[in-house]
Every structure is written in C-alpha cells, then in structure tokens.
Image (cartoon, rainbow over all chains, first blue to last red; front, top):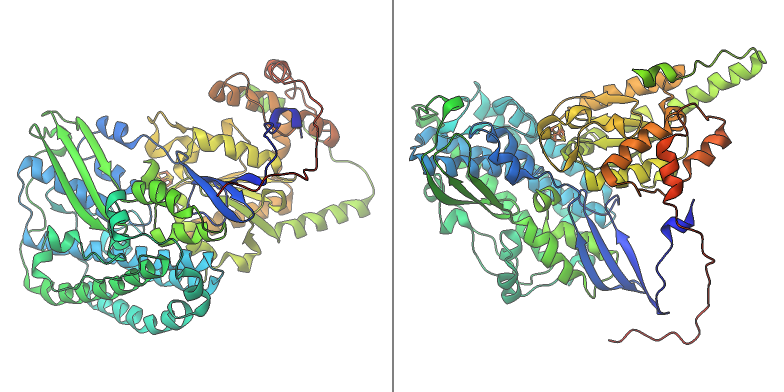
Length: 380
Length: 237
Ligand code: SF4
C-alpha cells in the first residue's frame, strides 16, 4: 500500500463518516454506487454515483442506420429488453406512417408480457436476496429460465430477442408454441402459492419491508415516479390502459393498486401484476390462432432507408415504469436525435437519494430493489 | 509481438521430485476450489445468476461467488468496461492475492463488440491487465460460461494459467496503457514493483519510462496524526 496516495482528507472531528456503497458490492443492483454519510448506521445523506455503465447510447444511435439501431436498443435495459425494441420500432413506424398488421401486434403483446413476467421474477429474486432469503432467488432465477427458453424458441435469443423491426416482427411462431406457452404459464401459476409462503407472506420480509422507503402520492408525482412504484401509492395509472398502444384496448386486465407506498406495497403490486400478465397471455393464446395475415408491413430497402423528416414521442409501459422515446429525423438514413426517457433514471437517482435518508444502511439495498431500478438504463 | 518475445522461459527445475509432486497436488487442489469475484461491468452479468443457481449450478464444479477481492481467485469481467469502471477494475485486480486469473466474458471485452465506436468504453481488456481466458459471444450462454470456466480449471491444473506473472514482468506496458487513458498522474494504492521484487518476478518490462512517471507524480508521505475525540459533537438534527 502507498498510503500517501490515498490519504484521507482532514475533517473536523465528528461522529459522521462516509461510505462508498458500490459499485462492486453484493447488495447493489448492477454496477452502480451510492456515497452515503452515516451516523451510526443511520443514513444522513446519500448521493447517487452513476456513470459506470455509460456507453453513450444516444450518440451511438446517431451514427448507425435506422435498422441497425434495433440491435442496439435492447442493451439499454438488460433485465427487461423487449419494451426497448418495441418503443423504438413504434417511433420509427410513426415517422414513416407504417401500419402494423394485426397479427404482428398480438405477437408483440405476447413478447412484452412474457418479458414482464421474466423481469418481475428476477426482481423478486434480487429483492429476497437483500433480505437474506436466497432460496427465493434460486427459485426466481430458475423459473425465469423457463421463460427464457420460450424466448429462445420464438425469437432466437435468450435475453436479447431483437424480435421487432419497424413494421412488424421478424418471425412466425414455431409449431406447437402456444401449447408450450400454456404449459409454462400453468406451471408458473402453480408455483405462485409456494412463492407466497416462501417470500410474500414471510415475516422476515414483511417486517423489514413494511415502512421502508415510504413515499406519498404527491411526492411520487413530484419526483416523476411511474409504473408499479406509482401504483403502490394508490394511483391507478398504467399506459397500457390510459394511452393504449398495440391491442391492449381489446384485452381485459386490471390495474393492481396498493395504498401504503412502501417497499412492501411495491412488491405486492408486482406480485399481482404477474397474475395480470398471465391473464393477458391466456387471452392472447386464445385469440392468436384466429388472426391470420402477414406479420410485417413492407418496408423499403433497410440499408438505404431514409425516414421522412419529423419528430415523435412514443411511450410504453415497461416492467419498471413508463418508457418513452423521443426520435427526430431530418430525412436522412440515420436518426438525427434519439432521446430515451427511462423510468429508472428517476427511481435510482432522485427517489433513491431522498428515500435513503433516515433509513438504516442495511435497508438501502432493499429500497433499491423494491424500486426495481435498472442501472444500465440510468447511465445509458 | 515484441512483448511476447520478452516473456522469459522458465526452465524446469531439477529439484526434489517430491516437491514436484507436491506442486502438482497444490495445483490440482487450487483448480478444484475457485472463488469468483464477479464484477457486473456490463450486460453479460445477467447470464451469471442462471449459471450460478439451480438450473446450471456452477457450484458442482467447485466454483462459487465471493464478495471480497482479497479472497477471490478469479476476476470475472462481464461485458463492456467503461472508462470509469476500468479504474475500479484495475484497483480490484491489484488487490487480489496471487495467483489470480482474469476471465473476460462477452465480445465487448475482446474488441469492443457493439460499442466499437463508443467514446466511453475501453475496447480491449488485455491492454490493461493480462487476461487468461475469453468467453466470446453477445452474450455467452450459461453453458458457454461454464465450459469456459472448466477450460480454465484444466489450465490451472496443468500450470498453463500463469498470466498473472505477466502483470509483474510487463508492468510498464500495462501501466503505459493505463496512463494513456487516465492521465500521467494515474496512481494505484498497490505497490506492484515491490510486490514483483517480493515474488522474484522482476522482468525486463517491469521498469521503464511509465513507472518513472509513476514515481515522479507520487505525493510525499506526511505524518498522520490521530486523536481520540472526547468532546465530539452529536450531529445536528
Ligand atoms: S458482448 Fe453483447 S451482451 Fe456482452 S457486454 Fe457487449 S453488448 Fe452486452
């Protein structure tokens, strides 16, 4: 060691001390850090320190063709990549005035909901691990793998499916896929009571999560909170219902709401959303065989594709919250500007900073997982 | 190429045959109990939980995650390394005790992958630290990760995985690349040169123009004072 290089700055004597929480820390989600100031184990101040995963997406997308960007966008949010492709494709379709065939829209709904279930299972696993219950993590990850198998079958990729292209989807379903989808859904539904007993009703979890990281509805709206975190404060807002895209207006589903706005409520909202997603998927399985037709609208030669000039703003509901793309085209072969408004950049920075204050240091990890923040999307 | 030629060839020591048997045994044991420090530097990290948990279960091979770099054997770099992360990766690597192995997962660690033109990522990991094994793919499946690690076990067992010595022998080269990225006054808290002397791994490339810069920018050591506070104020509520 050369202490001379890492000499601590002289501070006036006090009982406060600072800690780096992350980036290489088992309790933090991904590659992300917080600088916390503590007195005992009570957090006095927290400062988010992101940028470890910055790749400069918005600049990279300006340098690639419209079609090449499809391969780039899922990387923005790793645990839930499908809404990223979809939202970008929807933006390009809007700029070009492309009409997406019915069958493609249903296939897209199927992909989105599968991705939502997978992302929620993963979050439950991570959240349980922060409260010391590792078996839930093992179960959650193993069950998520069954969904990844389905993804692999119908899109070709386990995690990054790159299934959408502007104008539709890339492939038809393999034979007998809907049957296997139903079996997997049955299996996951049959597992849920076990999850309840292991995790959601477990006193270890309930006692620690109740009253941790509380926010009121007014605060949530002020801080720009969306998705399940907003619904956990009692406001039933869901882009799927309130600004429907694809065919969500033809599907029946409820918007689960909880009132208390703490980590417990947020987790319960996700737990109920799992059921709603299964319900949506069952409707898709029923309706999809009756919808025939093409899966893709004709598009011009993708390597020399000049998208008409204009700008657009599209939004979808991802498993983390409201995801939006602002895309500007100047009529050229590449986007002029793409801006991604991800839900996690609000949740992981301003909300987490404010919520950590006053809590104990061991609850920071839990708060972060209950907000379901996704660091790659914060940094982009 | 010139760097490769400089690696000295260690001749087989004609020592006690019993000691050689003992060395083999140590290598065998080492390869069967590996602790990985997995630093989620990029998106490849998402395939690590499936590889570690029930379905693919890396533990049956004796590989387990470990949270602290001091006790870990393998540094797993899971994906693209942004420049801010690379600093932390290097600090982590230097803190690990030898013998240590670096595994680069994902194409992004090999040549930049998807982000070959990005301004924010470091493209080739082996310019900054010696890498034992790459597992390419975007992203590699859990099976690929596991078979890659099995290959690493074989190499440890046969004594081929010794690239950590390369860091000591060619410290100047690695430090030069690090300085190119982080500036001339880049310092790490670990004293690699003293360690190299201790391990008797001083090579021709250990010292050079870049290590001279290192010494030039070192701050002089000041005496630290320590006081036990009796009249420390409680924080203002
Ligand atoms: S190779 Fe692909 S999966 Fe791996 S870090 Fe790079 S972009 Fe992500």
